[in-house]
Length: 278
Image (cartoon, rainbow, N blue to C red):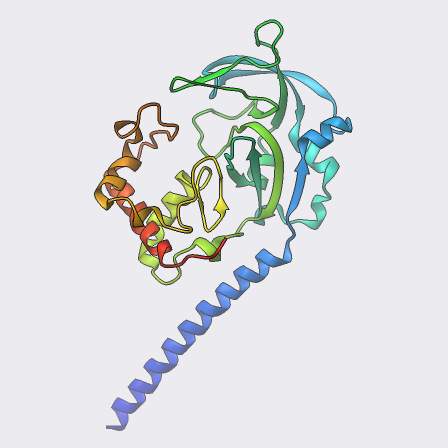
């Protein structure tokens, strides 16, 4: 009988230790996120103040937006950031760069990866038709403008999805790498982590949850979750192939499987029960 009680006591201590470690880890993540401030660069303001830096002409062999070779007038973005921000006060390994575009697109990537990639901020398209500053971008039958700024790289493969090529760019933010992790991560059901990761990598640049994310597409959780007014099967199919539901849809085909789409929907259903008032 004493042996049984000892085993129960040990089990309880192990569970309490596990819960304490989890809580400590979550508190450490939150503390790191709070300790590092958010920094913003307004690119239009810097341009008006002649603070973008020395311009140069660069050639992109295979531009992923125009799908051909392009020439631009541009400034070195890494130098621009270093001139405007004291990076000694930041930890580049734990910092991300967020790009804010006029159309609401809001991609992000690790700051260290970005700074080491020889990035350029293009402000003029030298291949544009006479009298124009930029060549129009035609995508899925829609015509868009790259102005005022476009992030490009001279030494990065256009197939490497780690690197973001945002056009229509107006602002740059430096934020803690783990910002929003606690707000969006499914802490109460870690089995949904796959859906969370898919949403973060495929959807968050255009859509927001509880006002966290891009604004190019609609907010998906507040005041009503998309899972509350779409039939689940149709939502899964829509995410896989939006064009099969709407003519000239702006949402792109993500190239994900039906199973992956279901994982995203399962995550969205979880977040529908974890709303925060905007």
